[in-house]
Amino acid sequence: MALFFRSSKRRRSEPAEAVVSRETDIPLPDGPRRAAFDRADDDWGLSDEYGIEHEPEAPPLTLPRPAEPRVFVVANQKGGVGKTTTTVNIASALAFGGLNVLVIDTDPQGNASTALGVEHGSGTPGTYEVLLDGASIADHAQRSPHAPNLHVLPATIDLATAELELVAEHGRESRMKRALRTYIDDSEVDYVFLDCPPSLGLLTLNALVGATEIMVPIQCEYYALEGVSQLMRTINKVKGNLNDDLELSTVLLTMFDGRNNLSHEVAREVRSHFPAQTLGVEIPRSVRIAEAPSYGQSVLTYQPKSPGAVAYVKAAQEIALAAKE
Ligand SMILES: Nc1ncnc2c1ncn2[C@@H]1O[C@H](COP(=O)(O)OP(=O)(O)O)[C@@H](O)[C@H]1O
Ligand SMILES: [Mg+2]
Image (tube, rainbow, N blue to C red; front, top):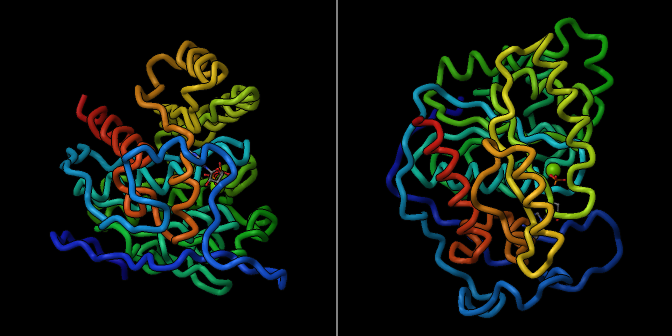
């Protein structure tokens, strides 16, 4: 059973080599490759030359515990907007801030499980067993090696069939909610994050029903708001029928490029639509953020001083401080 306990000693990660997925036989060059954009942009004086590791260090902050555990669903049916990146990095930042955090990976791709360094090969018990077999979260949550007090319920590729299998099941929309209730009662968890697949099917619906707050990452690009109105309609339906407690509490601007007028325009528009919900900090487009998962890490441990890591820590801080109000 995965139990929370606080320890002042952090385990060091071992990020010697990037892990490049080799699911095909096509030979890949050794080592990580840099993303093709913004090569020099976030390098100025903030980190060593590429490849030289920084000592993982906890951000120097202690965050307040919320009065009640907060359960976030990180949703946006658009793919590639930064849902998983946001889940992984905000969850890590809160954990480094001294809080107990659980990440539930509900995307069969298992990207959050990979980035948080937990086992999630086919057959590994996790979200599938919780949704389909009624297993308990505590039995299958794994401790992430990269942050203190951070647990992950992994997603495996087996979850890809869960969407169809759930259709015939009784109480198919509220299975995660029931499992979460038990977990919250039995653990000292402060924050739960459910990372969603890029669709509005039964996996996302289970996450929406299980959560009380929605966090929507919005990518600062031309089609940013497309799909958000559809998401809002879904949220309102869920709110009216399956989960009255659901609130869109947090909007986070991701992949912000300060040199680009479009980024500023999108940010302005999003802020005018969601003035109370949009966090003050924007997450910059950053090579370091994109590279971190290939080392099985969050950017917080991979390059803790990079602008992307600093922005995610600020975002986590804003979220934690808002809970006090
Ligand atoms: N701030 C950022 N700067 C640069 N690349 C990013 C940033 N956020 C995410 N990415 C990259 O964009 C891609 C999509 O992000 P991801 O978090 O997987 O989106 P989603 O979960 O919404 O599909 C990934 O390759 C990720 O590494
Ligand atoms: Mg994702």
